[in-house]
Length: 141
Length: 141
DNA sequence: CTCCTTAGTAAGGTAACCTGAATATAATGC
DNA sequence: GCATTATATTCAGGTTACCTTACTAAGGAG
Image (cartoon, rainbow over all chains, first blue to last red):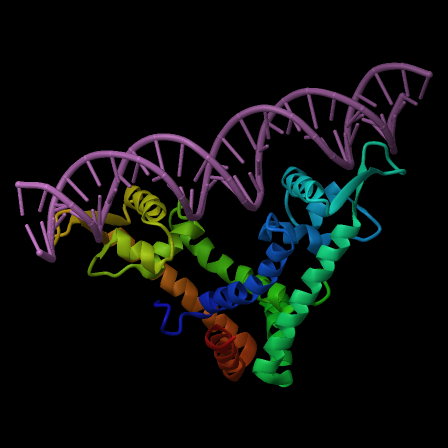
């Protein structure tokens, strides 16, 4: 129940997530201080060829309205652009700008750095064991 | 990057946390449907001899104002009571009611159930290995 | 007793979502 | 080929979980 004594697994998982994710979010913030954790859902579910808002929202499991606001903000930062979808005049395709590509790369390298550091801390075997365990929780719990 | 293929560790940790915590929050919701995840911070950091708002807020790493609102809501649900602190007339002690004790027990058993189920899934060794790994991340990453 | 600090609270703001409703276009039935 | 229904997006406004600023009441130091 306390924080300095080992808490239960659920809290442990959350703490570990917060600790690791901080590095990634900080990297984003250094790139553009308007970037917030919520925007990661956009980068995570984007598709390079372009993607419709409704599909992006569905993949991120949120409403198109909520996703639309995140896309608005990233558009204002210059990371994304909305272009008309040639296949459907109601729709727009959300695509990366060059700046957006850069931001994505920065995110990838931050994640890579975290994974490398974690593999160093736990050893390659320990790191793989953690991934396997977490994957079993996702698929079998 | 996708969700059906194994994502990076950071996302894996978050997904695992969400999956396990759902069981605990659902148990709370069944007890009183006004109970929300935010209230768990109160139960997590309570002290059954009574605790001051400022200390509770500090332990939960939030402002006294934010914690005060959560305590207001739990008081309205009948889980907590504020009594004058005999040692300082500015302060109040937040204490559990009988209903609050019951809620706490329900939370404990939900966490226990999750941990048992996880130990069954991973085996006792796998479960302990996970706890050890998560603890190393907390202390050494 | 005055001065500064601490405990709590009130008022109002922001971020990250949500629901409901409006608009434009597309697809379908007859 | 036109009316009906469905889909893509957007607008307006609400809720939750926080925050900051500013106030009041009470305690402690000199």
